[in-house]
Image (cartoon, rainbow, N blue to C red; front, side, top):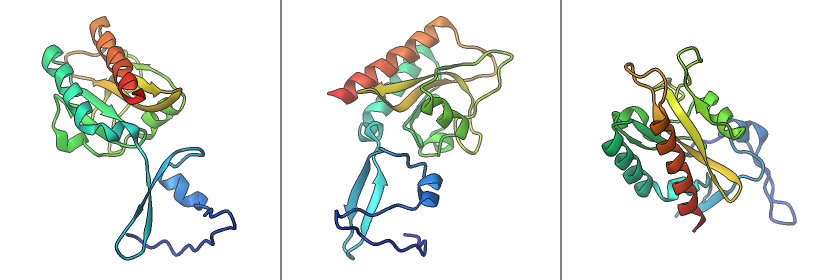
Length: 179
């Protein structure tokens, strides 16, 4: 763990305020669920809860199925990082933070379609991969992540089949998370 030097007191209702600087740097928004852990040394750890991350193995299998049947490279993310990829080197994407541009699209519940003239959207913060087509995964009214196809040199824009596969994936994963 990394010390921040910030100390907060618990109020009479048992609440602790997480400082704005920490919330901003970790992209913790108002109303966002946090998971609470304790360690053997008496520490309490708050971790952002990711419903998509809870089904990580399933999402990986789903991404691989889309890639094997269509040849389309696929990535699935929660609101913070890439949790599943297929058709590209995993070490370049898996568990890497998503780009701010992608996070903003998700925050505004927007789909994205690459065109030859559109600005390229990187998948990760470090600029790995470019989005070809992306649609948010919405479960119980909240955006919880996204499924996207990755841009390739030989295909500057997604076709209708690619869009339908990605849309179907988002709908399927949202239904799985509502169960």
